[in-house]
Image 1 (cartoon, rainbow, N blue to C red):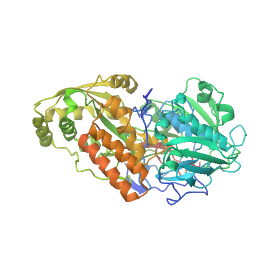
Image 2 (image 1 turned 60 degrees about the horizontal axis):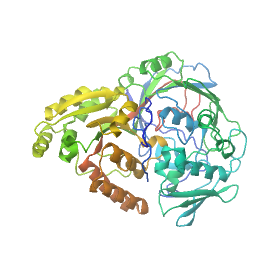
Image 3 (image 1 turned 30 degrees about the vertical axis):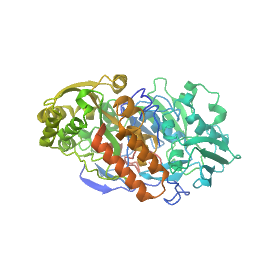
Length: 558
């Protein structure tokens, strides 16, 4: 995700069962036919997704979980404490850029629409009543839910929704979400309950993009300072903010009694506690200091299952990503980039690093995405192919430095990567660092290749256009990979064509062409799509790991 990333948070069992999560949405669900089939820009992104990660399955997620059959009694049935692996930097829903922050925003705010829990491919109304009504090719109306109120008791008006959309569009806000709303012109209230949205051109992604914008109260937000918006947010969600510790380590949320929307808040109070260390977070769970936790280390998924504790995983879009500096001689030739990718033994990494809880990436989109199309260029571990490609470039043994973001599951890949690359004919030196310290270096062009992580689905979208534009248009390809050739232009043009057509078959064909260009050119390419992990105490009803938050307590009961 990128403007320019300003910080990056840290982001098996005995039986595999098909998990069907309880629907936290009541009434008002939109069918696929109700959705207005619905591009991205550049400005800001957050690539260090130890905090901005999450993914989804095409249908119901396949959950792997195990644990004691003996239910444990929870320490306090009136509250749930969540151990977060990710920092909470602020709760302004339009500028939040860490998974910890976005996870909390999820309880405090609503959009007009939102993704259904456990299904990243289905939108349902939140503050909206039904789908957008098309007035003309570029004008839509949306009706607001009657009786909706902000946490200060004031009614939600269409002008609040218009204010929120226009605030995201305002460059002064520096919202990461603005990159996804480039087709929006402006929003305005028709009356108290009806919103008018004006687009710059006919577009098929309106509903998907409206789902990204959380609604703020104009009467408090318009004159508030950035600090007030970050620490004293007022939303319309099923929970309101009670306390936000000075050290950003704990947030306390209380069920909002006047909430009349579709989201289910069954637990009176939720506490979110930041515990960055994996071992300490697991110990807090096992000692019942927390009720649930996200991001349990892969090596602990099976071993942590014990009396009263259950662990589980769910497939996600979240991916390890190689970004090549195509302006450097080593990787200016796409054959060298391809040789790198053929050199990586992804199956070994899948087993030894992810313990089977990841899938080698065939394309930028995961194989369970509705718009996935298998590229003709498919990177399997093939040392001979890599050597042949290097030989054809005339550079017998290219030398380069690989930067690696120092997340545990990336660091663990280094020995395997280094060995296989050297076997194929590369001389590689490894440098590790915090993602936030590496970003300025990458933007300055002072690197050869970078292994990092990304997942734009954390913002609440999962359509192919959003996911692809994030990494292949704007700042990431231009300012990081320095990929600005004709093929890069073709990607943008094909994406624009896809968002302008309403025929699903035509869209799929265009997205297939994009995935082929990406695989062939490989300026940026994923190695794996990994599973999201979580652990929790027995006694939580309807709980399971969910994407994109990892831990989602809406619909959960004690």
